[in-house]
Image (cartoon, rainbow, N blue to C red; front, side):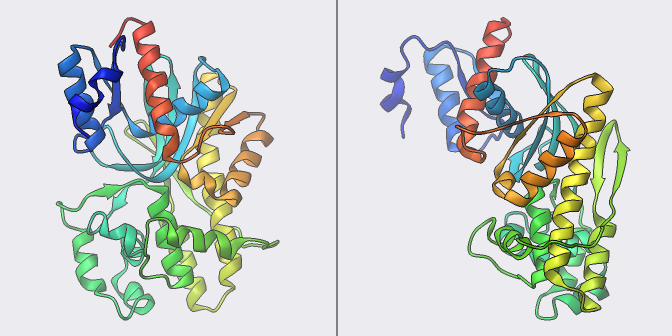
Length: 315
């Protein structure tokens, strides 16, 4: 789509909103529209837009803690975000927690080859060679330690890693395929192992470290433990870890609401577990009902952020 094709639809528009990612077609179109119409361009981080979409749907303009969990969003630091705990109000967004960033060897290729993310999380060459004997593990292990390799806090990529470990999924046709398989494996499981996690504060940001959990999963697979029970245990662990971060922040700042958004919340096990943990702590959970949980919500979130900034006189 060319900018001239849409200019006629923008009479009376006060601003244009877009994603932070500089290379998206939508971002480039927004830049052209802003320039041609001489109106402000408001850039909104992907996960900020996710949480803002929930606030817009529920008519909330008071501060909330947001859990945004998906496969990818361009982060404020230029890295690949996707497992985020955010503080969001009408003035902006602050990152206050995340899944611990790990290497994403091969960039986007890691979303189609889940075993790569398993190598990154486990960081154990011999273990990974046993788990994935037909894969070039040594080369990917070395790539994980290269300064040029991007890092990610993505919940989607964490699901990929666990799917590779538990289900042996090495390749997928589309992003999210492995995660869907992991949810399917965990459905209906009534008993699952208790898996621990660590939460560390790094530069003022809570980080959920799942490395020891994944090492435990890999060892359990080698010992012949039930993979479906391990899959259910992983869901509970991830939900508990992210909910704990949100609860800590909510209590520290006196907030009573946590908003959930992002494609990972299509996973009904994860959504149910996170919601249960939060509600048990006395927190009100806001979730999408009319608006999509995935990236279909982004435009609404961007528009809400832009409207709030214009209302505050800050564009």
